[in-house]
Amino acid sequence: MARLRDVYKGARFYRLTVMGLPFKKYEKNCNFVDVKCDCGNEREVRVTDLGRPHHSISCGCYIKEIHRKLFKEKNPSRKPVICIETGEIFPSAREASKSMGLSNPCVHEAIKRKGKAGGYRWQYCSKERRRIGQ
Ligand SMILES: [Zn+2]
Image (cartoon, rainbow, N blue to C red; front, side, top):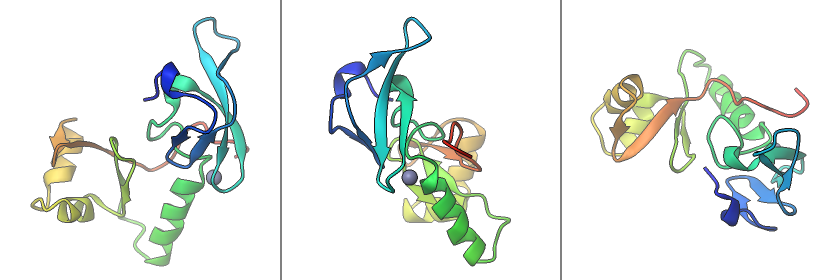
């Protein structure tokens, strides 16, 4: 999660680049900022949502790419998982465990008990919320 002092013009959060200075909007204590995604889409996000998986790591294209990839593999039953700290996405909990050098159900177990596996927190990513124009 981004702190206000980390948000300046040109700062990057996964695929998003900050386009200007944070500004106040409807909610009194809430700062927003304009960002541009690597794919070219521009949007406005809450500063506190920046860099949070499922919130603002991209305009929505990141998750779409993962889904497209999974669809191509013709294995829609697998649920992709995302590493909360790094934002890295794996096609399944099993593959995430494997790439971390952990035994098979580690990542799945960590998600279930909201704990850590390999020193990281994980989440299933079936969708990215607050997408723009969808
Ligand atoms: Zn995008």
